[in-house]
Amino acid sequence: MKAEASNNKLAIGLVIAAIVFFFFLFGFTGVRTIVGFIFLIFPIYLILNNFELDQFEKIIFSIFIGIGIFPSIAYWLGLWFSSLLISVVVTFILLTLIRLLLMKVYKNKKDLRN
Image (tube, rainbow, N blue to C red; front, side, top):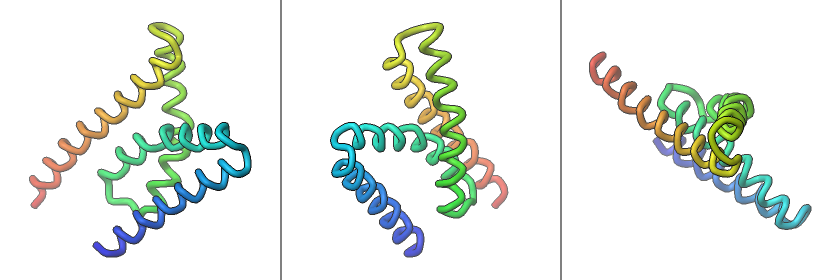
């Protein structure tokens, strides 16, 4: 349990360090880029958090899956239904709700196995 807490603190520290680094390197545009990238991979990371994966695996898988899935859903929603900004927010909320649904289903299956 302590290893997970230290991994989470390390990940949060790295994110903050990246934000500060990109702020000094590129200004506010760099901060927006990093924050956007975090919003891109965060819902997928939460979905993968339901499975028994290492911290490093969750981060790497969420980066590559997030780069493929999040923009595809946001583009499709923006193309057919609304503006791009609204579709990005809707995609973030949709993937977060999928995470909550998977968490309930996976937890119920885990409880049934025990």
